[in-house]
Image (cartoon, rainbow, N blue to C red; front, top):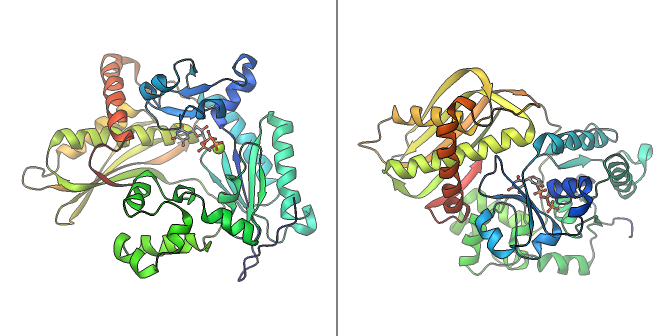
Length: 397
Ligand code: TTP
Ligand code: MG
């Protein structure tokens, strides 16, 4: 592999993005040699109803994270299906994080298996960005027996795109060559970080499939179709521009998600389903990053754009779906939903603390209700997982 040629023209930044390959599945394959080279699907108990991740062997059957398990079992009936063992993955996650910080304090950890490192100016200490990426991958393998993929670029977007190009066990430098540009132009728009499945579908409906298609659309058209901010973002991404800094992460203050509906909602069933869906997603985020929280906040935007937030604080820290759902529903019921329609609903959990013990995903005394809840989550996951309901946008906040 050649030395990188792309340099950020303005800042000369060198960013490395490292991402573990099929993380949960790889850990299980490492610990159970009988799963090696087999289609392995990790899902549940928290992520009930949907796949957390699928091994590369299972992806050949079209399986992917977020797919309902019922669909997966239909597509890959002979796959091996195992439950999520979050504590085990978090132990590996911490080791990986520590390796990142051995090279620079400018590390932005994302989720449990990836990170951005700004290694601009680290050359004298550790060698070129390419050498640093090699060292990181080597250390991760030495200490965890797991493979990762790394990408190097002049900004976060291109570094992340690069790390995804040669998975698994890849090491890719985005070079400023006509061949590399051509390759990028042919990639599906979903390779653009931040383009979720909903946006992906919206782009498809305009016939925009590849980054090249996006590149060829004038910025004014993108802004007119997708709004000022999103249009600018898409234009920048298609041009490989990204000025976002690698922000060394402090502790998160809260974790939340919100749904904007395509049409305003006045039926309680849909709102309840949305709250359950959001509670499940937030519980999964808390769980996967090793946090619990004490305060639940809901945010409701009515059709007239008036926005209300309400919160409740528990005595104990929790990351249980049931707690988040029950309290957000209670808060929702305090609002005026008879005369008003809702266009957005959001839930967040704050007053966080790190915790590695996850025994109470569903409270024992609530087991009865818990089982019903689990069945409901399975149903909701199927519906929302396929975006069959009326969602215009889902976003973290
Ligand atoms: P990813 O890095 O997105 O996926 P991955 O590591 O499994 O596979 P890849 O080689 O493509 O990077 O996510 C890291 C882990 O986070 C993944 O192993 C399981 C978990 N996860 C979920 O639980 N639910 C999800 O929807 C996604 C995307 C990931
Ligand atoms: Mg990964």
